[in-house]
Image (cartoon, rainbow, N blue to C red):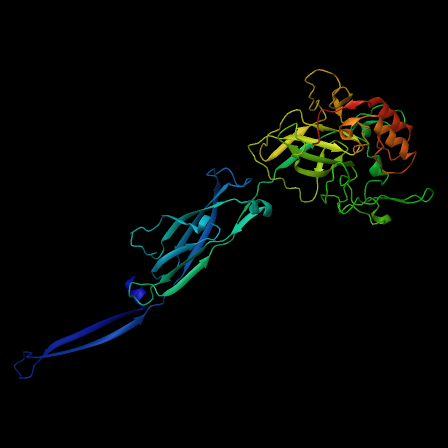
Length: 439
């Protein structure tokens, strides 16, 4: 190895003998000669740096971070892939906490030099900050370097370096599997009787959802404009939610795109949020507008990543523009990165500690089938109007007047018309109050 580090190998051969200079047949005069030959070494000085994700908080089974303060652990290796000794081996990782790198093993002869073929192992840690949560990932590289000995003096003088491939550790995005029914879409508009699920998709079929274009040569064309830049229906009071989930659902008044891209099974929009305290609606953790399909399943669209504490359980809150707010009857844990809850087959959250009978959760519209109460079109006129069905909701209906082919807060049976059929639903459900508070 010293010869390779020297850059060449020089060999000297010597010849000698005794010359017979007096004719006696015996050599008596010494003769000698030497010759040197230098063979250059082919020196390849190089190192290879690798960086790998190890675990989160010391748990090898956890592959994604979720909270500020989570500890991402890395393993970094530096290998001498050349044929010269490398001195002063160094790892640089700006993503490591304080730039701190910890050597673990690899210097087999404890000489402090990265010998040919040796692999040194290091560890590094990164503590998650809020910017990492917002970015959705932590991405970075590690750099290895040293000085190769190319003149054989036992010191490095030729720089060698290598950057690892980028290592990406992603944030834990919680998935949802949620189901709920709307009473209004389970009512037969003509008879007022409840139909067996799935829910009707009348608004969608009639092209009356926000952004859709209803074409009719006799009655005229109707364009339901998206509500603001968000496109979804909750950017008005009391929600004032400005998420852009519905921005892409816009026909632009084009007959060819009359459905605005809505799946055929969509019934309407709902607003989903989480809370850890059932009595504190101001939490509204990870609030998202979502599409409600006829079978009751809720589809999140666009960028809907929810970063949550995987050890925490959450109450699930569902809101609709003219139905009573509902909440899961209990806090739901995150299991395998998913929150799962079905409002359709159980009564939802109800708090009536004095047994007054004044508070209601969901309506059992058919045996074993539960749905959100319809009739809550006015959710802004008074402080508590958002969580009750009262005369104010009827007043809103009266003031709106009869109408056809509309997307309206007082279309309680979700058929696209405002008529006495909506009054019938309101009358059957008034007065009713929910114990789920929005704030």
